[in-house]
Image (cartoon, rainbow, N blue to C red; front, side):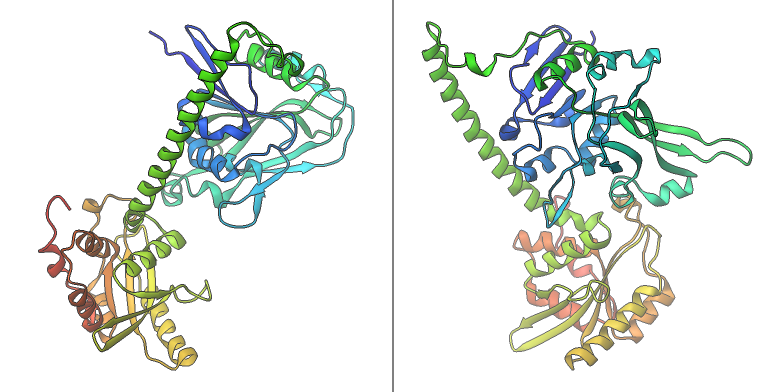
Length: 455
């Protein structure tokens, strides 16, 4: 039995419908809490036809981001953006970034207006004909689209791509363009291509579902939404109630309205509880980043776990230098160290990590007039499960770290210490004494003996 096609329309109300093969759920911009798992929908429609939405952008980023976009489009889904998407939205961390960042593509716009247009007459684009027929004037056009590399490589492993002769690209299908070739309406596909042999063209190895950009036209927003639902989604729907009729009351409506208010209040309360629990769960699982993250996210995870183990950790004041400074007091003894946090997809760590740690110790002497102990914390073969990762320290590497008086450990060793501490099985004093008195690779037998199979 074929599955029903699930459609979510974000930014509108009154178009909800359900039949045997299709369902439409409407979520207004100020009620994003009511939107469940966006990856569970086959079609996502974002309505921007009435201007820049007023919404909780942090919540929007949680719902639709490069990761959820990938899961929607890699599984046969598609996403429509209706209206002008050229605005910026607040970043979850700081500053602003383009609204369309969730696409993992960069869009280059031409902000000049005009009225010339060519609409693609090919048969496969006939579903867009009615929508675009009322595009008499336009305020912007799209010059070019390219991969947003810093974003896209959070979704894929660049080493695997290189190994398999793969690369990412954007294919654009033109629905409408102006007289100088810029797009007025277009379909964007992320594609994975495999490099061809000499003299042969590259082949598409993986084609994502489309992101379709449709501009505002002379019609009302509701009329355009109805056309999209009818012509592009196969949903025949009735018109939503106009604003002026909302004040009309029919017999029995008051009781129903009161029930709706109660149910909505209960839903809001449960959603708030769910959101709080989900945040607690995310916070509890942050320690798992020690086992797979790379770069800055790994550095942040390591520093946070070191703090949970009683270390006073300073974030780096220069992002291009050391990865942090740590102070630990055990009784009257004060230990001080400088951090080098390293991740690699190779089997063993390279000498560059030791050289960097030497530099950081030197910076401690020149900048702080102290000799800090070098702490190397690393993760090897981050693209493999823990059981498939080999011994990370070569004999020459291990000997070098010993001679310099540094200590080295794996991020999974630190994770083991975190688990023991959380379960009340770790002696903090013993852990830090062993870390700071070891010259070489930390012997973690004292941790392994306390870890159970459940841990």
